Image: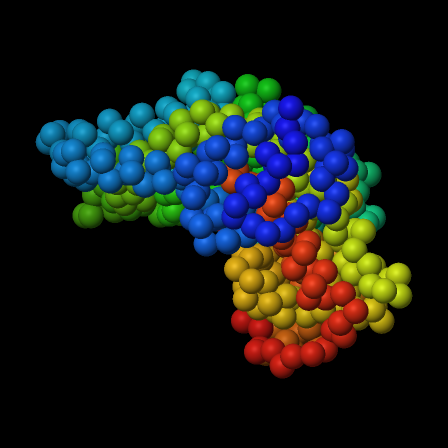
Length: 494
Ligand SMILES: Cc1ncc(COP(=O)(O)O)c(C=O)c1O
């Protein structure tokens, strides 16, 4: 049986949990994830050694020491050359890259007959591949949720340039979920003269702002309405399995460092082969063609994923993806998900119960307040006793001074930010975009009290002491304190 003593690695911290019994009563399932405490001690030892509270797993997960060791061992064993040639160094690379590709498909339970995996630099590059090659046209549409990362929002510029209609589906309510009625309406609409697919529908399986997990059932719903679906799985798959034999989007985008920290610079577009064939690349390059003629002015693209991997793939790091996936399987993504759920529930409970001495709440949370259909990233602002928002830059600075890693801003998800801060269409339309010189300028024009939220996110090496140390910091630093107590530098991102 787990006790509070075994919950907290006592020698590393003088902090005692204030409500340990309550945590264990509310989240008895935490016990089933105890193996991760040992993993933290063995593989993420720097966290406790440096008393570092890492709460930015949605930014990037942390890599285990064993992943770096495996990389070094592999590279020191033999020489690896540029793939796609028949020399031994090249063949060695090609074999490992293809093994990693197969491991990616296996991880998502995707049939290699139905799906393939294109290696990209990151999830953003995967989105761009789809955006620039999708057959957008005057008779089809790009439908997407307000709640999307900018790398998915940006696809609208490709759609616009081909005269496709762009249609955003709003979110609603305090929990910032998508308005399902509006979604149904958007998916049912047709453009006159439609010949082929109704267009592309894109949404995140998990919001990187509010943590909301959107329904995977929308994939089939949109397909039944004639849409291709791009599922942005970047924030979802670090703590949840995704089974592509059950949910079959045309395109799935991921960045591997978000699952296991290392390697960076490698992502994937997992795509249905049939959908990939319908994409039309706007250019060719080294690596993507079967043949090309200079004098004849023609080229023939290579088949399948090869047509989408520009130049030389990251052949020294792609094999680390296979190792990372094996590492994750050993830990069991369901166990990580369960721990993250328990800790997220506890963080939400602790944050929402913090008050000033006048009884006013100390934090305003954006998104769901419970753990139902939500992941482990929580967005909020601290509020002072008179109800003013504490500037997120101050929070980032003060947390950093206590060795707490948080993220602040709108997390490249402006649609969710507009929902959270109640900024309506009227305030944003028109010439405002052209008048904006800086982010601070923009915030002043909108009369916003803050430039963004604070995000705490949990992951593979998180424990309950991380949550407690963060809450302790919040209480000591913001309870009964006025919001305006520091000069802050200009913002360089929103
Ligand atoms: C939901 C979501 N989609 C896409 C991305 C883009 O990932 P990358 O910056 O690795 O391309 C992120 C990164 O934070 C994300 O959280």
